[in-house]
Image 1 (cartoon, rainbow, N blue to C red):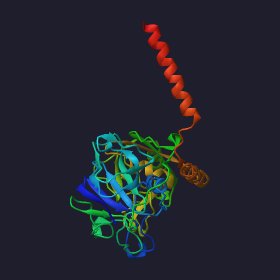
Image 2: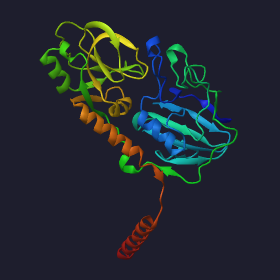
Image 3: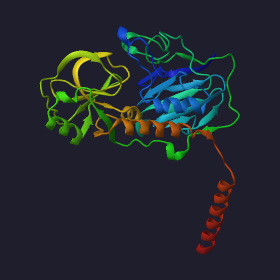
Image 4: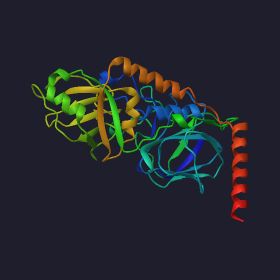
Length: 338
């Protein structure tokens, strides 16, 4: 069902889901949302399964007009979203009416936002996924970013309107900022670096280079010293692998990475911290902290527990009481000024 007309595609708006798996041995990247926490949260807020397709919006958001009623949720970066002439709340579900236009004024915090629509974005599956991989023109809408004149369809023949709004509670909503501490598990080739090189990696502050994209984040900063050169027999490249080529500069590999590579990998960023890196803008600071597998698993459990808190928006007695207290305080203040 046609749900959205694209008036302006923005800087880089693509259809993404959780990724394309089972084809890396043929050289096909997983792709999918860079910030999986935000993508999954957006889907849960509108009643979709985690792997439903939605839109990934980068830095300069699109202008989208809804042609039928829809339940939507916007998560991830604050890109200055407005629905008509009002700010659109993030991290909660909202029902929009036909003719409503969603627009964005510019990035305030983070660089990637995620828009889910109840029912899920409906594009043909390619190799088991709807994710867009632009370099090979796979998935999404013709394998490319959204452009003016495109139509976004949602599964089903009628709008899905939730009976009650859902939210991710405020304590679990990430604030990104411009300094990002990433936890890493050392390896698989940390033995190919000198002790001084490993120390440099873990003690230095790096900055995100403008030459960063969905394939990987190139970092600028202190060079990491190899023990016997940067080259290895090519092996698989996991999500979050920190690859160090001959210039000693770390590159963190992301969703559109090549599936194998022949450079040493000093560490791997743990899964729960990939979303934080995905929200880093050029010039942001990045530091690394070595953790063990138990810490990494614990971080996964914390992230899953945060997603499990998604539930109804409650405007109960506590809210009413606070409003009454605020009204009394305002009245007293008014009397004191007389």
